[in-house]
Structure formats: C-alpha cells, structure tokens
Image (cartoon, rainbow, N blue to C red; front, side, top):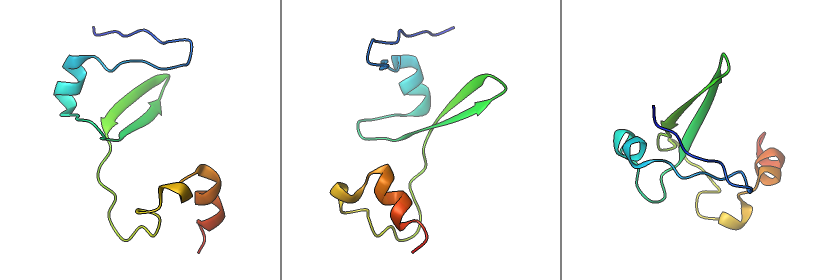
Length: 71
C-alpha cells in the first residue's frame, strides 16, 4: 500500500509510484470520484469542445463557472 500524509493546509504529495502509474506531469489535472467510502484518483482527460474561458484564467473561478453555466 502506498501512503502520503496530509498537511495542516489539507495538501499532500502524490507519491512517485502513483505519478508514474498515472503518467502525471506538471500541470496535469486530476479527477476524484467518491464511491462507497473510497476515492478513485485518475488523470483528468483533456476538455473537449470549445471552452470560452480557456484563455482567461481571471474568469476561471467557481463563481464564474456557476454564473455563466447556462449561457
């Protein structure tokens, strides 16, 4: 079993064997799925389709996504 420790800021380091298995590199996004008290961690796929906020990081908050979701 591979383990890591949670910091006081709720952060952790993804252990090297996990990064290797998921072929993770800097900037990759992760997806979390909660199922029966377990968390499944996967490498998030690239978003498909046209994302109007892709280039505008300053408009990339949860509030912005919620406000513009139905446009």
